[in-house]
Image (spheres, rainbow, N blue to C red):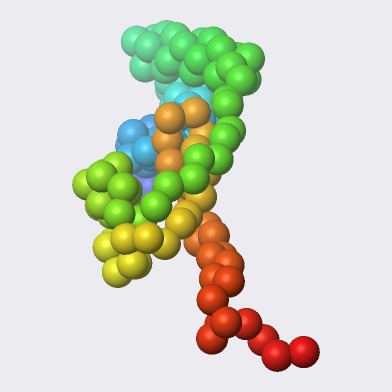
Length: 140
């Protein structure tokens, strides 16, 4: 075999390594743990196949860590809630406008509802304002 050819076993090892590297780029901890679990599992089996015990043991240990953390995450209850704000609220203008820049364009009196998963803002919805002034009513 020349230096440019890779056999299936080497490709399998590279796949495991790539999955571990990709997992570390995830901002969602559940995705990180699942991808890392698959990557470490494949890399541990690669270590067994090539009789590299340090590779197999280390990545097997990482698999156990991922399983424990995924089990703990599955037992956590995430509190979802919705809180109403006005667009001029300091929290909206200083914190959430960094996440959603379009919030800076709203009138300060515009009401909105922000949905949270735990402490993390997930989405916002504009609340329709009912103006009772005669010029905004529809004629029957």
